[in-house]
Every structure is written in structure tokens, then in C-alpha cells.
Image (cartoon, rainbow, N blue to C red; front, side):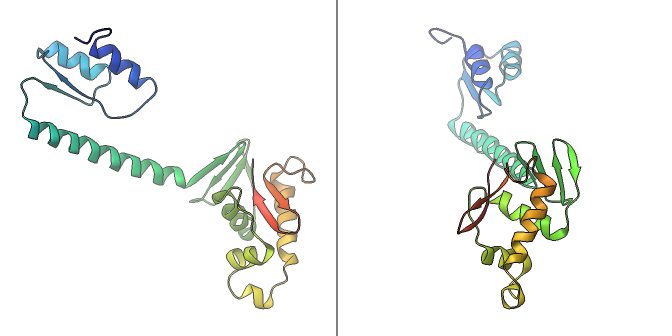
Length: 179
């Protein structure tokens, strides 16, 4: 009963680009109207006259359900990082390039994981030694260890290690991840 479109068309149009919760408040109260509203994508259907406290309670319930769903989705997504052809599964500690599994050592995986979780951030060799090899690595470790591991990592994941697609060098500073 809107001027240009009906509520079903508006709901359907919104659903084409958004998962935002939709509650229909309407005077149409027969069963078929309710079924159509929910079929077109509404999360709830409330008929007039309505109690405003009930509407508030329904809004809170939908938002609560959506926030729980979003938290679950974000947690699941955060365990798998996809950048271009590269897929890094943090739980199983596996890396795939174009759906082909790449075998990495523990340190190579840790290095790649740190870089992919912080795309664009440049890490110095010293920082990488600290984060990947641990705090005591700076006392006994050689910063060239990082260079060797980056070279081996590139040989495994890059189509052309001399012209990297993923792990880049910021000359005079360190390494960073970019697709």
C-alpha cells in the first residue's frame, strides 16, 4: 500500500543487495499477506494495531540473532584468509595456491600467516625475528635468517619468485604482503 511499489517489491529489492533485517508493519493481516511478506524476505511481519513494546522486543530479538550470526560468520571467516589465488587456513595450518596445497615448514607458515593477517604492513627483519622466532631470537639469531625463509617461501608460493605477487620487499625496511 505504498505510493509507487508495494511492500513486497520493496522488500525483494532490498534483499537483492542487503541482509539488513526487515520488519514489515502493515494493515494487511490475512494469512496469505503474512506468508508473502516472509517469503519475499521480511524477518518479521507485524499487523496494525500493534503494541509498541512488542515491536521493540521483536526488533531486539532480530538484532540479537543477527549479531550472534555475524559473530559466528566472522570467526569462521577469520580462520581462512583468501587473497587472490592464495588461501591460508589458520586452523589446519595449510596453504593453497589455485586450490593446490603447498607444503610449508612451521616457520614459513608462521611468517606467511603474520604477513597475510596484516596486509600492507611492513615488518623489519628484526620485527619478524621477534614475532616469528620469539623474543630470544634477537639475542642469538641472525637477521639474514629472515631473508632465507622469505626466499624459500617465495620459491614455494610465488609464480615467479623474482617478481613476487604476494610477499614484497620494501627496500631498506623489510617485507610486506600484498596481492
